[in-house]
Amino acid sequence: MIKKMEKRKKVHNRKPRICFVSSSGGHWEQLQKLKPLADKYTGFFVTEKTKIEAPLAKYFMLQTDLKDKLMPLKMLWNATYTLFIWIKERPDFVITTGTMVAYPFYLLAVLFRKKFIFIETFGRANMPTVAGKMMEKHADLFIVQWESQKKFYKNAVYVGCLY
Image (cartoon, rainbow, N blue to C red; front, side, top):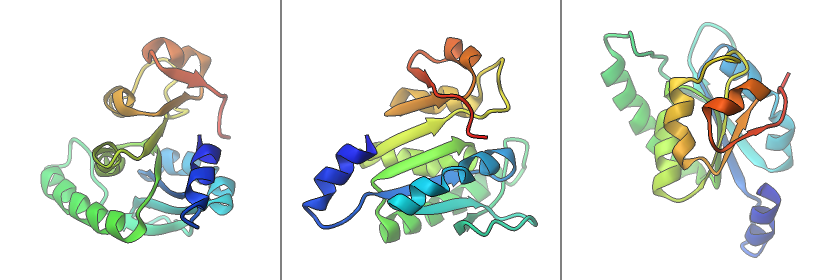
């Protein structure tokens, strides 16, 4: 899919731009394994700001989760910041391993008809994630890292693990 896009974009003299976005922790560890893809094309990484260093990240979002009382405000801030990043970077693809930090990028990818690739987390072999269930419907490519995850997602493609 990226190679097809690359051929089309060469007419415009620009390699495809890829946004790699995920929350911190295990999702981020998995996403970083795609650095060779970011190096081959024009990629940039987005994650949450935490105490753990993330040298690959170009942009840092506020960390939040569903149990966070300030979650609506943090998501509003993240959505605004996402719009700034989107205008500045103009990605052609969004690739994510989840979760909430990726949601505004997902929405913009759908709105602007950019390619959206979701990679279900390695940590959930026997049950689907909320992010996966939500984002599967608009994913151009939905990848699972366990064969057992295919039963939860009708459009899933099993490719093995990123590790």
